[in-house]
Every structure is written in structure tokens, then in C-alpha cells.
Length: 115
Length: 112
Image 1 (tube, rainbow over the protein chains, first blue to last red):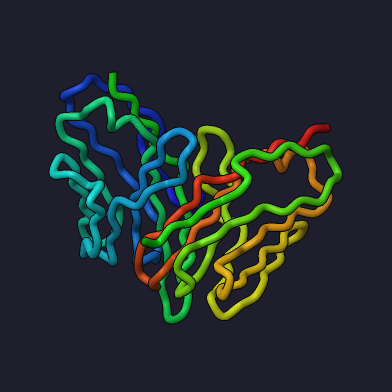
Image 2 (image 1 turned 180 degrees about the vertical axis):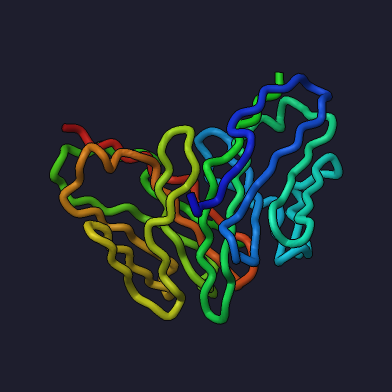
């Protein structure tokens, strides 16, 4: 499968625990994005990377959230001290942004439930 | 503020009907616009991308149009089928590198 992959697909955790999600982009894609989607809403941007550099972070990304993309390949999103309000679908996307073109392709998402 | 709105929020049609989904955006200085499909509990599948310089794109039974001056895009689905039932999301990119801004989606149900 050459699409965007995410792991795990589902995560149930207790409030206060830390969780980490992984995203593997389409190979050769230089940009990687994280979004969060709650029920009945469109996805909301969290952060994005060009290669290993984190270029933009949303104000939605509180200090409990951290994302990395070491070596410009896969990315991880960590949430510390989870809260019930963090329950959502976390979506990863990647793109090959070249002159005049940037189409984002999404993975299947990680569904987080905080009890 | 850059916002994207989709109307209606939900739509139910009989099989075989042609239909139009609407998307409007507040800032016309877009880079591109993408239409996505999302099945329940799943990720997003890209359907069509329209560059800011284009007026429309077609893929099979789908046709998307873009009118930047009025801040509108439409997704036309011809001869709808029950398998088309899903949520359709419109998303706008305002600069090449950055974030997509999504509408809330239109939940489509096609009845056999």
C-alpha cells in the first residue's frame, strides 16, 4: 500500500495518560500535516512540516501537544496529560508541494477516546 | 477571517438523481480548492482538486466548478448511486505550503 498510514487506528486511554500517534506519509512527499476532527465537524489544522522542519502550529496545539518529524520521514504526535476534550479523530496528510501544485492525501486516522 | 461554509448540512435523494453540493468561502485569494469524500469513521479520500486558475475539473460522474469572484464552488454528482452515500467535504488552501480550511461537510444519503 503506497498511501498514508497511521498507527494505531484506535486508542482508548484514561484521563491524564500520555498517548503517541504515528504517521507514515507517502514516500517522497516533502510535506506532512496533522488535523483533528470532532464528530459532525470538518477537520481542523494542527501543524505541518516541510521535511523535518515544523513550519506552522495552530493555536489549537496547546503545550500538551508536541509533534516531530525526525529525518523528514514519519511523524509522531504526542499528547501529554490527556483530557476528555482531546477525544477526536486525528488525521495525518502528506503532499508533494512543487511549484504551482499542492494536493493533500489523507490517512485513515487515529480515533482517540479519553475516558 | 477565512471561513468555508457548506450548505446543506444533509441531503437525501433517490437513486439516479443528479445533485449539486455547495461550498462558499469568505476570502477569494485562494491557492486551490479540494473536494473530499469521507465514509463513517474513515479518513478522507481526495475527489477533485481545482487550481485557482481553473474553472472546473471532472472525474467520472463528478464535476467540480470554481468561481473565485463570488467565493463559490459546486460539486455536481450525476446519476447518483447508493454507493455515493458519504459526507462530502470542501477545503480551501490559501497559500501553497499551508493548512487546508474545511467546511463542515454535507452528509449525502442516496436511497435505492
